[in-house]
Length: 297
Image 1: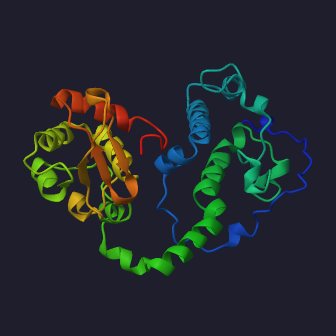
Image 2: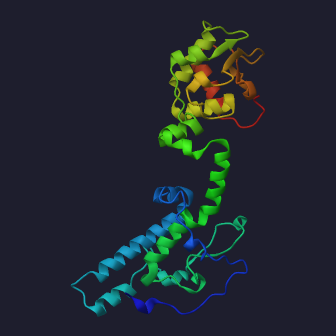
């Protein structure tokens, strides 16, 4: 298969070259098979996109080789004319080798052999599938084993991973991260929000706030929680388990409808002026939730 594409030139090894031979003899990691290409796309979108283009090129290569209507000479000609999707560049023009190069020097190394002698094995059409497989395996398995073992050890000191089996993935995410899309009803707000110091549950200003919060979209609710509590998510159980509970107090002073709400995030205090209408309250509250910094506190 396109054996004429194999190059023989070598490239000097980096002074900080790492060897992955020992990794290839390790037993299967406890997390092997959990991470997939969707996770790869999330964590390393640029490399995932590049490997995706190599997958397309590989499919084109296999289609040519399996085409029984072509002679061997015609197949070779078509292989020689293959280019990367959307470009005029051939695979060999990239001058890549069987190595992984991290995106930053913060990782402490500059190159990592995907297989023994990878620094001297150029990427070509003949080995494109192996290169893609080893690259993905390194990013989702062999290359992150030390970090995943450290995570496992640290997590086990707080909560034994053996007990996680009782939860579904959705339940465990809720346990760890809380309500990622805040959900509340009018009755939730009336029951679990405490009006004080100028407001009661019957105050027009407080009731207007309740209506505004109910009508908020998901992103607006997250912004409000970030503004009022310092966290954009609710704990498992929602407002009922927010501790301390959200407290709304009347903000006194000059300014009238031009005055903005302010907060004390440590104790979940929302200091709300008495606005002339629900619409003004909504506008000022949304304006405040989009502000950054402590000048509103």
